[in-house]
Image (tube, rainbow, N blue to C red; front, side):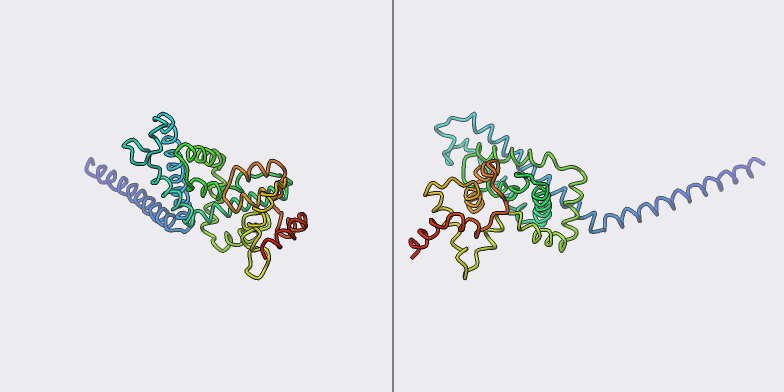
Length: 270
């Protein structure tokens, strides 16, 4: 009798274990398929690249703080034993700028710019995202790089889980991301300047004309915005936007607005 009950117990638990094993097997198959999907891989790529970018930005801030504590007479001497090297962080930012994740972020920034324009907002921090990243790569001491890094980290502070998912979706749907960039050009002064520089058009000298206008002392926030876009001066771009510069300004508008100086500029070119 005891032997029979023991056999039944073993059979019962064997059945339970078989069911558990089946569930584990099905779950493993589900996890494997999920990990293999392009959506999961895109999300992980964006998270990894974003974490790397944030680490580089924070490292720049730490090094910038350390820089301020050094002897002001020696801290800018690259040959000094205590010289602070920020090339590794800049290398990470350069890699990010040339990565597929950067396209996903540019598409996200393009959406933010378009939404700002449609809602009548004069400024949108994400419009300067690419310029700010490139600005960290420019020359300057570790403290100036740290200040730029702080602005970028503050911008990334506002990225929510839903927005991170949307950014990842841009990486998964590359044709869609490219289409977003195309549709956002009218809301991006930098790309307007670059795409208007055809060799057979007077617009290819627009940067020189904008420089000329500034030399003439012209007080025009949109001229300042165009100049900032072509030179990478994020601070000037932000100030121009605060003064009411429109991101929809184009070369024809600037030339028509300053026709007399344009004619004078044409004489100089000859």
